[in-house]
Length: 426
View 1 (tube, one colour):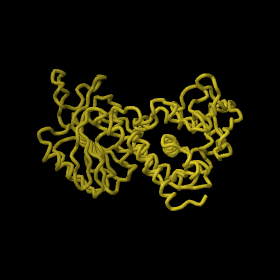
View 2: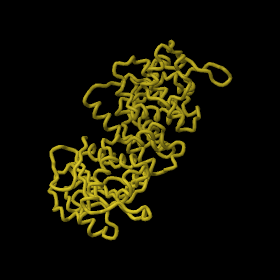
View 3: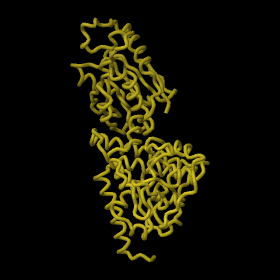
View 4: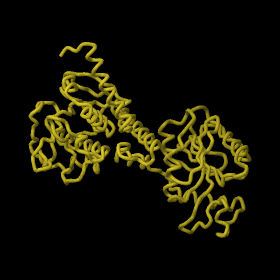
């Protein structure tokens, strides 16, 4: 098929218009599609992705309605977002392809209020979305569905249209499904070409890391834009990813208790009477389950020497502290490089999540204590926890004004000359 320039422009406009519709109606998918390159490729026969591009055969694209095109765009980008392109390993290809399609289509259905029309193509029927146990695929990973399919697969039922496509006519575990009225309809994924999925290179590893961050960024953006998270905004797998962030390495209940107990003695403080619970203090009673840690100032180093992974690790440690104290940790979170980004208060995980890293210049620890002295005299923090690589001159201890300081370092190389130190690895 020899395409004219005008026809190519027409097809690319359709793809970009589909992306725009998804940005408006299913923002999570639309944001992820902004990272993709779109290519017309007659060798594709239908539609495909390799993790960097989404390919369309012009004839196939011509046959699609706008609703069907939107579904296929969502389908391909979810394969990328869920990293199916890179996760096959030594698994049997056809079974893994089926498992991936079940998970992807079910997530798309969930994003469309479980409307099966959202995953239906004329000539192909309703796309597979149920795991072998009869539950929706969105409840599982592709690997879990793959294991369920072992020994349960039958020869796939080919669709009458385009049955020779490279996607090999995939269907539900039994090769067919019962629709309303008991009629058997092809649930094939024959249009979805997985032949461009390859893995094992350093480039693939870098791409996996990039997509992990893109999915997290998109999930956070959608969650912040509409915290109610109504239909069509945030798929279940992205919601789970957003909740997880990264598991903290630090036992914060132990480290904060030990750190604060020692400094209560060092600075001649005594545990307050419970009649004065609303007075900001360290731990009212170290042995009670309803202990509350208040007025902790967390400062995360965002200087140029801190990589994205290091900042993510530090950010996740603060989240870990909130989780471990089960809502009874209150404080402020700020960022610093050669200057301080104004610390924002948080009393819950939801408030913590909307505080975003800023910075990227040089490192100056002194600026933290100058900021506290100049801006927080009326409500000094009970303690200061600085999450950093430590690669900067340390200020004089007197600048802390008697406030206990914990340096949480991401290496074993730096030893602070004063304060307490703890370490995490990246």
